[in-house]
Amino acid sequence: MASSVAALLFHLLCLPFLVLSKSTIEPCSGSDSCNSLVGYTLYTDLKVSEVAALFQADPVAILTVNAIDISIPDVENSILPSGLFLKIPIICSCADGIRKCLSTRYKTRPSDTLAFIADSVYGRLASPDQIREANSISDPSALEVGQTLVIPLPCTCFNSTDNFLPAIYLSYVVLVGDSVPGIAARYSTTVTDIMNVNAMGSPVVKAGDILAIPLPACSSNFPAYASDYGLLVANGTYAIASSHCVQCSCGPGNLNLYCTPASLSVSCSSMQCKGSNLMLGNVTAEPTSAGCNVTSCSYGGFVNGTILTRLSTSLQPHCPGPHQFPLVVPLPTSARRVSFSAPMPSPLPAQPGGAVPSPAPRLCCQGV
Image (cartoon, rainbow, N blue to C red; front, top):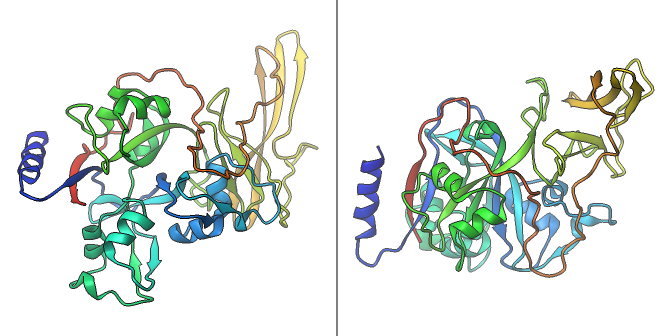
């Protein structure tokens, strides 16, 4: 498999006048999906709500996954600067035997071309040819104003694990000046991990390549019928849940999901744990001769408009201190990277997908 892919790459790279970028394709079967992220650089100043509209995403979810403060009034209409890099939450599905996101729609505007939509509006997350094929466009020069296009976005799941630990995968478009060691350091992983996840023969990338980057994450254990089943929160960030009623965080001290009532002014169902006076996120600790009895009220998912809570008691060697939350940054006013990866130990030799075997990823070429 690897040799045939390498031969295909070599053949395509030798074609005259054709510049190719590479991306990682994860084969799949069935109809399962996972939480995933794409890295996006704003091509112009945009409101938070406008960025969300480009990806059919929740504006508040975009801010929380980047650990940006959501407490300011009318935050959805705040303007984000051109050139700002953001992580965008998406649902990664299985379509045509590979992982991809097909839920993003774009309505064409005057003077739009497939090249402009692909390279500028969506920051090279999709190529003009991929958009053309996804929409069965025979004549790319004949786009109609107001035409709705499917934008196929790259994504991977790999069983939402990396080195047998929970992970959420970021589809990252390589920029001019990027290197694999630099990208690995930025996202608290290793060169070996990135190379193995992306089936790379050498740590060489060029601008426009799309890498799958595993980010350590906190996983959830909600029932399958919960609307937020499979929730993953990247280390050092937040997620909004239960129709903006619950805010969950991951890290920085550990990879245990921690959820509390959100600060947004919305009407919510009860968040009190049955059989106790504890509210969601509350923890009590009682020292004993054997250690410390810890009782907590945790989040159990969102089902038919109801916030599920779980009351649990455990004996621990020591009483826990105050919970540490990930750092929240102010709403950016200038273009810069919003870093949310908390330091993590170096991972073991990489195996994307961890305990559950996954089909080997394939490298794919796309014309740019």
